[in-house]
Image (cartoon, rainbow, N blue to C red; front, side, top):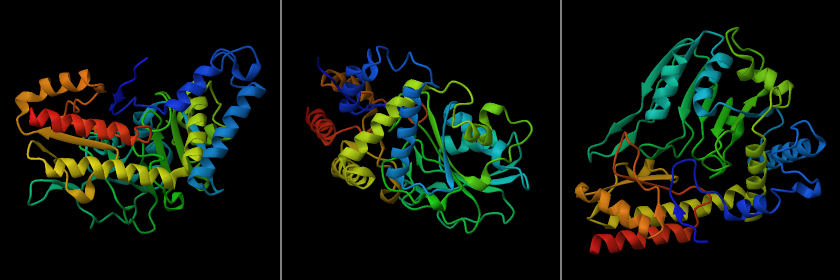
Length: 358
């Protein structure tokens, strides 16, 4: 079997060791004679899987005791609605820092439930590169301030947590979750779709402070009410059991690799190598200012875009797949999440060098 280097933005490449582990016990989970996908989520065997996954995630991120971890469904778009329905319940106001498509969509959805104000932070600097304003002003009486830590479409990532004073901070960390250390205590709520760095698509992880639970709007569906999910240990309905199991395997893999700090070091090394090549080339170009470049999603463009189809075809033949950029932005995009090894990034750069030379 020959595996390619998969640069998909999500669902994305997963650690080979994790998939091999899941394969080996897929038909007979720990000697019980059934697959993990066949047993009840309320069985003793599955409860042990779910509980251990939560403990490992708490260890990895050093989640404080006054935060709950919820394993939900609905993806990021589900949280676009769940966040305001649970949190926009004081003044009915929230400020949304927008830096790309996902934060803009989140703000639009929140506007269905209250006064969601978009604060456009992305702009083009004097060099024509995408940058982010950091001197932002927020309303005093908002229920929370929201931002997307890493925008997968345009490849913009925050290097520091925005300073929002004593306001409650909420962040979509879907595409850089577990890629670097994060001080959970600075947030009221963090959420992440699993299909980037954690598990197959279908699972959404929400980390929410205790005092923000139990305030949901009457219109909030029960399945999105954080208190109900917390009270039921994320098993108000049948959870995405296989995704949760796979997430637990990934958490253990991260621990074996040296934890979040080691993963951050590897991710920085991969990103620096790829951006270093792009900056040195006159055949390719990037569109984001260096201080805001994503370590996870690297959009780039051929200066002669008539070669795009040829580039993609030859890359695929070389075992490098899913490099086509998002339909909104065009060009190319290499997503280099936790599971992408340095060897994959080096293979991509070698191919890009050959392609440019030829």
